Image (cartoon, rainbow over all chains, first blue to last red):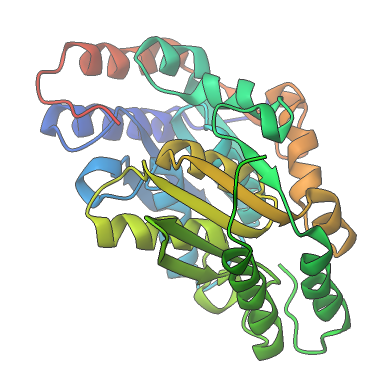
Length: 158
Length: 158
């Protein structure tokens, strides 16, 4: 196992507990660490901010990137009080920190009524068979946008 | 297949093309529709906003929820110029629109150099074996936050 700093995870869990105690949001906290320093810390803010994407990991990633003035988190580590849901896992892959430490699991989240495990299961189904149907239409028209991208001299790859 | 409105998808694809033409961001556009009206439209803004989570779908969901003053999109449909990546799929499940129409596929995105398909593959691996390792530590400590949540009388479930 990689070395980790217990104090960073204690901080993430403390944020989760504070969020429950204040009634602000779900039992989730996350921090981003760079060079041994916390550069972002966040709690789940879905209900107070009317933003279903405001999970602790997403809020922390956005904050860290804003402060670092970059859209990449190379050289950073994330500590999350719970296993990231598919949304947050995807966000982590796009932000590309070096590694992620998590404490609670998707099953623990499910036991407290959260959809994390359900969403992981839904992703394995073919798109049109999901509880929220994903329906593929007009693919040929969309390919033009990718062709434009491939030929663009202005593009910044991310 | 569910009925869909071709003009809505044409609009999403038009947003994707405009984004490439202006050099602002990736070849992706998305809109949210409610009661036959567009209530949010967005382009990929990752690089100009230094926000790796600013995919078109995420930006559109956040905008729609902000305007509707809710964290749920029941009764809404999403049109995306491309199959949502795992991050956006997760966001869609948390926002809970009725259905999603998409045009390009994850393979089309991969052919233009985007990680969507790679991330879908990574999710199927056990957490510690991924290219970005996900390492489980201190689970027992995290369970206290879930216990607090279960017992909380202040909580708002989402």
